[in-house]
Length: 193
Ligand SMILES: [Ca+2]
Ligand SMILES: [Ca+2]
Image 1 (cartoon, rainbow, N blue to C red):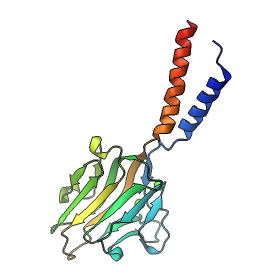
Image 2: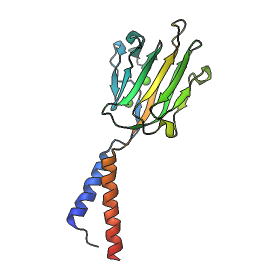
Image 3: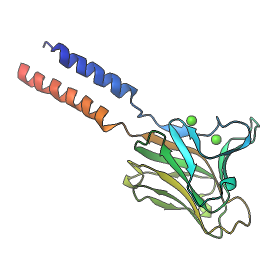
Image 4: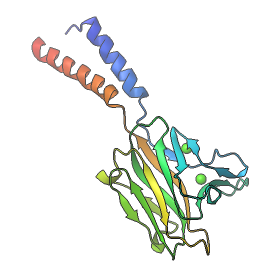
């Protein structure tokens, strides 16, 4: 079968675009945070940004780098407020999981919510566990939120998070180009028989 040069070009271009499209999982481990102990939000890593929504007290939410090689860097949430994960370029993404290194909220509520209606309410038994975030409620998101409500400010740090694992959803235009090229190729194959 002879491919027309335009079609071969389209296939080559689309496979290049697909190969280069941001479809790999990103683990936001925060380890690249400067060793300034408390790095205020917003904080960006791997094409994603963590920001504090209005209403939260900025000094209570930060990326804590203890500047010691043996101690990991975490997202520290010490008050009522919401930390939002978005793709820095505004695109869609899927969530996979997050490590809840500490959960000690006894007054108030902690939850992981999403733009697709996800609402994973947390409890003390979740502490130190990896929390899976799967299904339609955590797919094709514009944002993923870590939410503390009703905390009175007393007691230990209510929530410490790490290793937020998310995957960018490829741009529809790129996927469409690939599908179009595959479709054209399939049609040519049928015609060639
Ligand atoms: Ca990373
Ligand atoms: Ca970390």
